[in-house]
Amino acid sequence: MKSLSMIFPLALSIASPVAGQVASSADPPPFPARRLAAEGLIAESGAEVSVAYRSLDDHEEWMYEADRIYHAASTMKVPVMVELFRQAADAKLSLEDELAIRNEFKSVVDGSPYSMDFGDDSDDTVYKNIGKSMTLEALNFQMITVSSNFATNLLIDHLGVKNVRAGVEALGAYGLEVRRGVEDQKAFDQGIINETSARGLFIILRAIARGQAVSRNASERMVEVLSEQKFNDGIPKGLPPGTKVAHKNGTITRIHHDAAIIYGAHPAVLVVMTRGIEKEGDSDALIARITKALLP
Image 1: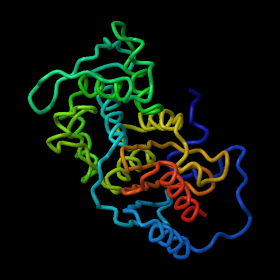
Image 2 (image 1 turned 45 degrees about the vertical axis):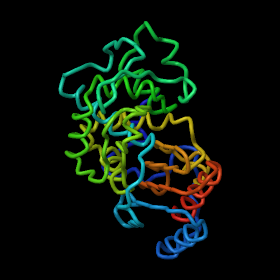
Image 3 (image 1 turned 135 degrees about the vertical axis):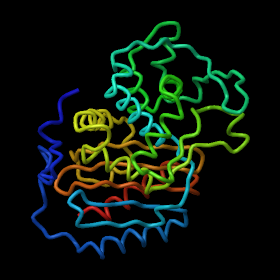
């Protein structure tokens, strides 16, 4: 992955356009008008929607139902990544450490074993390495860019879910609760789920954007990974082609979120969370429309 040193200056000089992106010479609508347009889209959708938005120059901010709690889906993988880099910074591990790939995990309910089901995952790379090993860095890349559930559980087991929770608390991302790995059916049946608010995710992403999640270097490396996201039908679709977006989405039945650091002419952090839309394509389209309405 190429360095972001030329496109990720954290002293808020990042307001210049990304290479290849042409900033519009026309004055955008004022922020109150853009916010009202986004509110109109939410009202028309009939869904539960939450938005957390702030430009990185702090001139614009909109928190719409930002403390409403949702199933976090795969957005909970972002704080797992932050904890990985924190432990690397503390010399508790190296990103180059090899981790044995075994498909057996313990339910947080009673410690009973369960295995991951390839049919429920979005990637087969880690499954192909069962009985072998992968580096922590490679597992993190699969967890974020293609949302590998298998990689997520391996990392949570290695890092410790209590440590992930402590890292979230240290950043002040209240409303974001990582309670377990994924595909723990016994826990799900008992209502033990990972939850978040738009504000909680926003706080994590903003810390990364400002170089304050672990360290400047760690934050830059996390942005590099988030920028390689393979599922780009939400927030990125609402932006001009070529806009740099570092983001993580998450989807389960009738729930769809996207949380992003947006670069280009108008750098910002934007989180859009939805609940109640049956088709993922429709929720993707709504997230993209809200993004287009908000971003000048």
